[in-house]
Length: 238
Image (cartoon, helix red, strand yellow):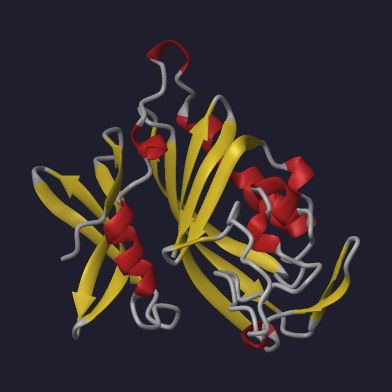
């Protein structure tokens, strides 16, 4: 077991879940773990490990080194603490934004940041010019001279329309709602029909979709969302 921990607690449903880092056959991974308690016993266990994207374990090692972002740990003021359905409605607008290829329909906080598979996926400092091919970001896209989606904030990143290759997000399995800290944990299925090989990025033009999405495929993803003042402040997925 690694050192990274990021938990959401839902006393109303008797659940706890989140992310931990683990070693499997001497290779670090990030694992989503959910437990449900009933009558003082564990009645449900759910896990998800993304082995295909883990590579050499860099993402898990990065999380172990940096620890949980303090923003996740901040409790919401009790006087204005939203109900569970309000938090779910806010988070669901993220997925509706992906389907609409529009970050403008999503209530992103100004400081919103997203991490996927242990890699920062938005607000990344631009790398200096290099003759070497750019590494793929956590979404699989590679930066070019005029297309650097990872350097953008959450809203601008989604407004590139780079996620247009995602043809549906279903089912959307919301698992845990932590009202005290405004956290929602869920497991979602991102479906790709496979016929979309390029996306039209405003101001850039046609950008090729990562090869792994150019065939029919469904990707099982766990994601956590931090909601503050009705806005998405942090997103972390595997």
